[in-house]
Length: 299
Image (cartoon, rainbow, N blue to C red):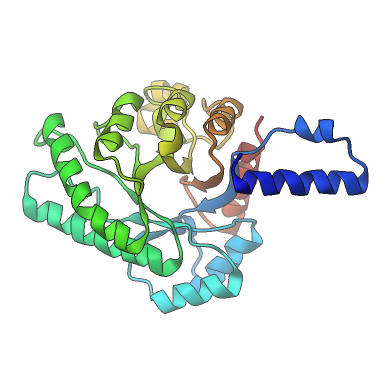
């Protein structure tokens, strides 16, 4: 048992003794793997200051928010908003990885993403976060699967000394990039690099197009550093088109959240769940917060 788990269990047991609760009842209560609620900063569609956006999210029950990086925001304003509200900045999302993928044949294109990742790692450290979300590469007509694999690994290896210097983890996201589309391969990709600061930022909804999230979770295991919360409807995909599958509210698509949470618990995941869904104004963000609570509590 890890020290953190020991302390939590000891505290629970002590509390139970004080109020006279049967410990056997507590022992049967499920442990929730998703314990901190976040979302992406770009989902906040309100014409207000950074500070007021942070206050809004805190009022709605969010524990944190993730920014894109590089970005044009004033770092002093971001840090002041964080400190005044207590809203955490658990990580950042690299903002260059789609337009300038690490798998591109042109070294100048890869260099743009590399420099952006260097900035992201340093921004994340400044914000007090722990991860930079990175799409590892893109396979298309001009970039073969094998070339993407080799180039992406080579560029990530070059980034690791910067990750070590900052202490920030590089978390690869599973996306619709025609690349690393099986959990076995995704696990092997990071295992071949074999570095404690490299793992996966697992997006639950993105898997439903061609698989089941719980299968990926079981295979990736401890390689999962953080989790994106998203929904997908296979019926909408079939009836309305591929991308229309995302046009469904959390808990109303094909993700079996109780099974997903059970899989997360099985691998020992305990941490952030970050919404990556269509955002909006305060009313819309309130709905997202409530839907995330339902996801977190699904057993």
